Image (tube, rainbow, N blue to C red; front, side, top):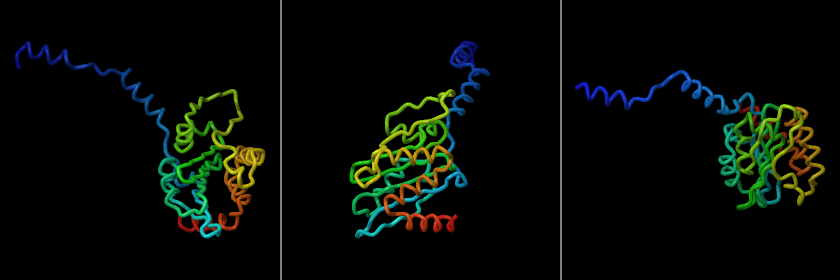
Length: 198
């Protein structure tokens, strides 16, 4: 290689210093890791088939991907739509109601979007940019708090259920929802079945 070629080659190389490595580390810090199987409390779907209540456990990996959760809920044969519920680490829950093309979602704790992929997906779905506020210990919910108003769970009732979840009882909060939707017995059987499959 000639001296001129050496010079040209050297000019085309961009230096890679420690600052570049620091930038890569910062990018890694922004990445939200998936919830592990041990951190996922439940993933279930509820619907009525020929008027009878049905609750089935769903794949745990759906607790990390809202789009895929919605896709799988659409495949279930609900007479009037399907409800999906996810609880993670006893900290928060996500409810999804799918009726035809209509999709409603509720995230019990907005700040969960900073730590968990599913919650982050919900914020994206709703077009909400969640920011960490260190001085705010109480996080609001995100989404359709009146998603079950047509079947008897009014806004005030759902807010009480969200409060239960924010006290570290997200599994109990989901149970309250299913009890009020008249799926309570089927819900508990589905949880037993899911526990036996782990």
